[in-house]
Length: 196
Image 1 (cartoon, rainbow, N blue to C red):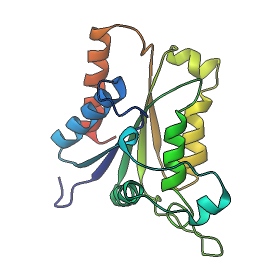
Image 2 (image 1 turned 180 degrees about the horizontal axis):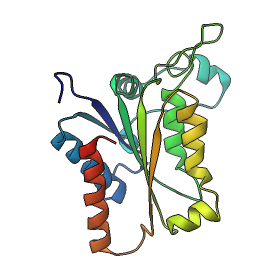
Image 3 (image 1 turned 90 degrees about the vertical axis):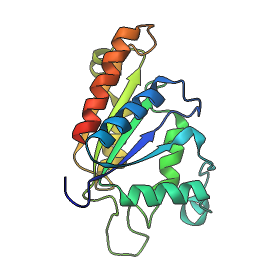
Image 4 (image 1 turned 60 degrees about the vertical axis):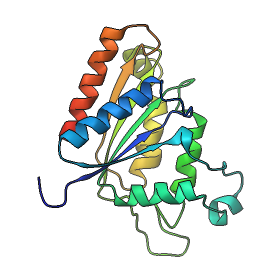
């Protein structure tokens, strides 16, 4: 590794701060692997952060930033790679995760402020989306079109300059299958170790 190791931000996007959820275990596995791989690792748990929802253009343009959102912005700005772990609920990411990104990625941070030259602090970063769901991953992609993931890939990350964005879909997450989940954790830890 170089003197300045690649910086990875691991975001557990589950809205419940309870660390017993599969998403928390996956986030921990990725972070553990990335640390073992020699990367500099920081972690955020969306469910443990304090922030309001944006409800108006005034909120979006000039609403206050909580300390947690300021910390998230600093971590995101410093990162070279984002590992975002979240569940699919009703075909889409949880509302709290979208609310988090609406707070963090405001104009002036992720894209230019109005009347400013176009830029993005997110350009040059890569991302890995690790997504859990009750349905089989093939059903989510083929029958539902994978829109809940595509909205983050294209409507949020691509728009703000993040590329490439890779995805790992884990279907049947509701099943009581300790062996299968242990394989998932090993797979995600390996991704963390490779920094992808």
